[in-house]
Image 1 (cartoon, rainbow, N blue to C red):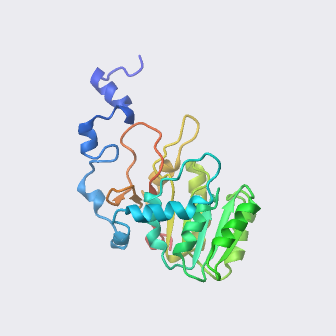
Image 2: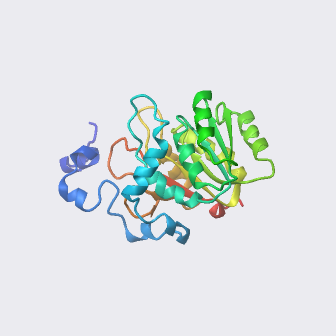
Image 3: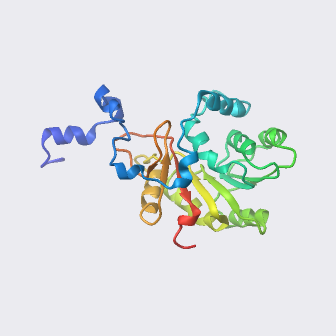
Length: 264
């Protein structure tokens, strides 16, 4: 018999989903908390990320991205992103994998150095949106787009050629959200990241579906060998932890510091 050996209360607890949360569970921080205190002991470099996103910051970010919205898509949830991307202020080289509407590239460009280089990788070309993006950049900033699968060796090589002798200050992995896709992007492009750079993953708590494992599974493996930090809404930054409730959760930006990578 399926679930044989479990008491009925154990079975109920094992299959509960987020929509069953009650007020007491929310009060202690569900669905991601409470966690042991050690999870909140994080790298001091993340101090800039700790403050909550203000209403003004959120409004400015949404406005920056507004002209790139596609059809009936809702306004993106940006609190996680704008907190994590404080790490990129004033940086000079940036790669985004999975650029979709180009809106996040426009936002990041507003944070980067006046002479920054931005590279976007996506499977779908959109010259019209690329033109809108270029028009929104600072005068001396450069934007390059590479069309193709991020796992295609020629795409990887093309990114390398665009960088030349430069190294990336940051990568944002937001393309294929399967565990395999996210891990491939990390493994194939980490070679281009500067020793003091950062690697960011979007939707880092997605555990996949009945067919594919999600980004969360890739980060679970990665966290076994190097620290992975989570920037989640208005919550304190924490070490990586899987969702504690069964549901298809999205959002939350994961941060990996290149200097923590053992191969360097």
